[in-house]
Image (cartoon, rainbow, N blue to C red; front, side):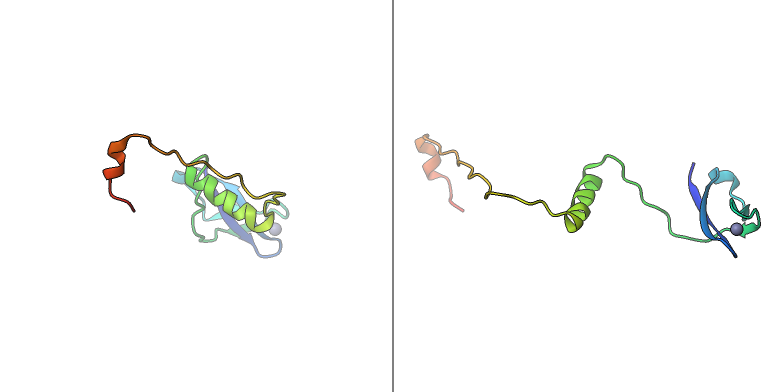
Length: 92
Ligand SMILES: [Zn+2]
């Protein structure tokens, strides 16, 4: 069930879950119970578990908490082919 944002004149904004088919224009404030009109806001994009969302989360996390390393990364060994036919292949 999606959350919709409402704004109470005296208490401020709050979110309230409602079914998409029955979103009220006014919801009672949870603090003072005054009727609060619904605010028109952009939709929240939720990407849970996808590779793109994990990359975005990791990127945002490194902006605040960069990983500290104590040594340079280990060198990776390149595989060298011993097949003589591979010598005829074009080089980059
Ligand atoms: Zn209120």
